[in-house]
Length: 51
Image 1 (cartoon, helix red, strand yellow):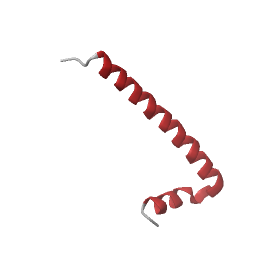
Image 2: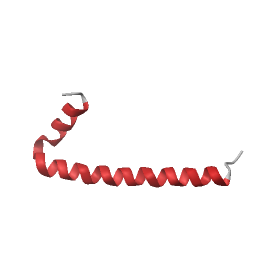
Image 3: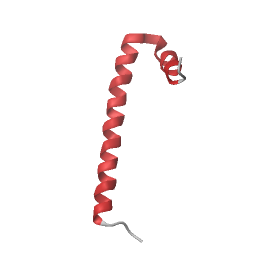
Image 4: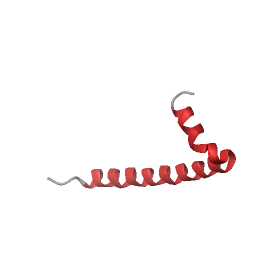
């Protein structure tokens, strides 16, 4: 069973959004790495865990 044309468009759009988010994440990581240097990973983990 295949997916409809509408569903195909939705799948493609969702894939595009994921790619955009991934690129944005890379940009944000670069900025954090630049600002925090070697501490970037540790800071990210602490913030993720609610400090």
